[in-house]
Length: 214
Image (tube, rainbow, N blue to C red; front, side, top):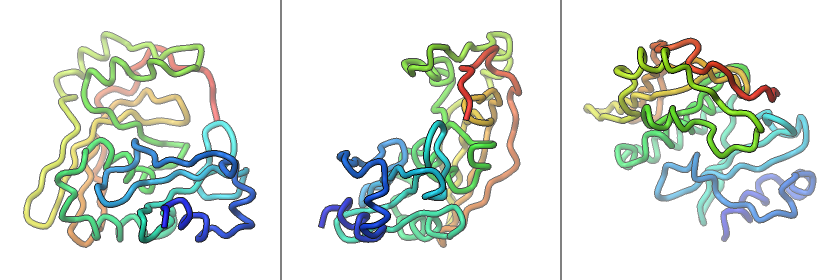
């Protein structure tokens, strides 16, 4: 069965009929799909319908799905940890940027303090380019050159039954992502997730950000 059909069945026809995405072709989100055996789907809905608030309108829910099953991933539940445990053997081969971005969906502060994962300093320089905000993220060059030696890259390492991802992120409320820092995510073979204290590299890495807010 197609993954989207399994998702539709799990949500039920009444909920599905209220989704903004009903008349669209729903595709997996590559920004949140680190696994080879399944993909992550984002289903948009009306206000208060799902547990993830949208940036500008409505809400959404997330599913990890393939041709055999569709599992809804919630902030309150432990489904993401089950998925991580089931995929433990392939975690070292996952793109660490995509894997950590998915994990942050469940372990950050939601819209009030969410993360955008960067690969390196080059992706910081290009952050927000091509987005239709009408305004740009303007880098503070002085702050950048102070932080740049410590940015390095987002990468993962494995030792025994523990995978650690060193993550370069921008964090903050809505689009106001001025805080540049390093996070360390630890994942055990049982799927348990631990976030270590953040290492802040700059509290105001951008001189200005798009004025659009939640």
